[in-house]
Image (cartoon, rainbow, N blue to C red):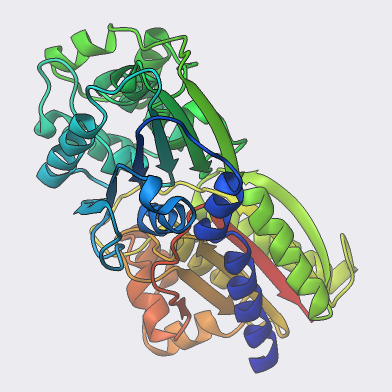
Length: 415
């Protein structure tokens, strides 16, 4: 079992290396020139790495730069840049003040100037200023409800765009008359531009009607001020932005398949659109593993079944965990006693929920270890406390912040 787990770790490492943000930014900027002042703004969990790559390519051509990233995700100073950190997944006061610094940096620009806007996952929470008469408390209340109710990322961002002064194309308007060149790592299934970090520089495809439908679907509790702001439509046309998507979950899965093949496993990328509840995805991967071992399809062992996406978690307890850890722990309950099978779930950014783990790797003996410790997987999942259980079984995957963010990787290996 040790060999198959080591292979799984190699697949995780190789796939993340393939989608690192710095190389993606360098490819996007190599050979390009910009007239006038160049202001570089980087937001999201990969903001520091993206900004550092831009600084290496553009050097002193950068008039000024701002990085706004998650706490503990910056790696020191960058020449010509101000590096700021704020909270994720819920915004805090530093989110607001950091966003205001960015708005000030792009004010008073001319039509000849360029704003290079570097976007990565986490940007929705990290780049924020409440619209109208709303305040941080309002945004915290609605975001907390969205995180707990099981809304998917597109639904969450639809609400965020209509309550924000910078999302849904509004930041591009603040940059005008300067031109904006947006380079984005996509953490959105299908790479929908207006949903990546809630589309600060993109025309918004969602409408007020869509936002109110989401409110009704999940029974969200909104103040009158929030409801009034949801009636204010977002920009449907943006003329000063060019956007390039440089990384996505597709690349992550292709890289995982390539490494699996090199290790001797026949790979199959099953889907890059997994967006169901985490526990259900875990049970589904486990069911595929059972089918492979019993009937030899869709592939015969040794093989690797690979998926990508972003599952959701319905929070019912007060424990500590994340969607990838819940997926893995749920899978562990279904493969108990099985030999030569490993199921993995990891976030490409290296952090799963409010934990320092990227995700987990489980096998046919994970549940047995928990049973011996008197721990019920059913109870742990009900309490959303997967991190504690997986730590006991030495199943956590620890990568540290990776500097990229292109959704999550799910896979099973069968020998």
